[in-house]
Image (tube, rainbow, N blue to C red; front, side):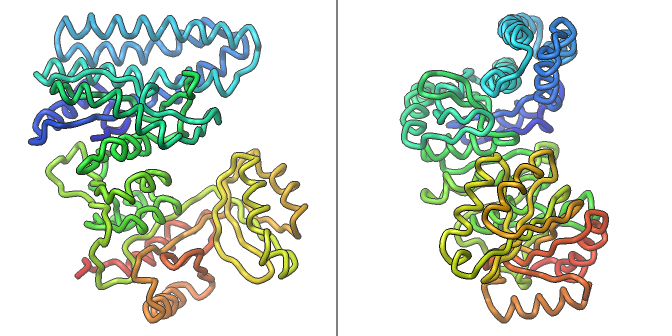
Length: 448
């Protein structure tokens, strides 16, 4: 069971989560948690302030969040407060040391930032352990850094799968065998040399599936603040509804293309063992949510959901047909990796490729390197809208859908970057109206 930051925002939320865990009929559980909402950003901000020499101010900005944890523990009584106070004091000592180091050097480091932000998940996991104990659950804090081992790519570390499996089983099985429920922080890990790393922002879901795969779990539950994976972003489309089932491939595609409740790496660890993933709402625990599994049911529509990404730059790269056929994409991917930038393929042709990437400070230097592999044209303030579903594997369904999409908006061009999607690049300002029109035309009726 994994609970995100929006499920852990205050004492009442921690009590709600404790009730969900305690009422689960299967007592052979492992729980993974994110940091309390807002804590990771506060830790990063504090770290950056210390690099400017503002050490005392940097620490003071965290006092509010320490107090939030203490107040949340208070719901479970005086003993819980004292236990949490001890955890916070240990965290504070470690943070002070990190802030002094970064202040002395007047610069942040990826290693230091990983150590800093790990405090959020560690505080949250300790707090939930205390609250669970207060609700009669025999829970035990487990340090995720002793379970998930990675390379030393700080900020976006890659798990060492075999080592992670062995370590996770060694750490968690003894707890499970003695009927204690392990509670771990997501997102955090360590190198073989015990140096703290992180798996990338929003990767607690990934932690949960890595741990589930290592233990051979029967099911993974991802608890969030919506009723599962929605047919479109409910912030844009008021009529969006829960998609009851997705295949692993559909879920991975939606995650890659911008679905908010899915992490892009979370599917891969569990495919081989066919462990189902259930997306549930901690604010409405009786809702059935979305099940992600092998061979999910098909629907009357070729499309299961519509995803979108904003704040993108579109990059068109053209070269010779011979280079495009041999080594072109590999060279481009290497450049994106070097700049630590996610590469999204919108379409391909015999003379080039159309890409989308986050519109940030890395783009100018990225473009400069890409010009070595071909002619480059860019367009900023773009977004992508994607229709996703296994039904698109049928040529008839794909052709019918393209015709419908053309009728909705004749000015748009739709491409496939896989046999599970149709993608169009649009002006960032037009995302809302386009997603609404596409949803209305394709998904306004419940699936058969």
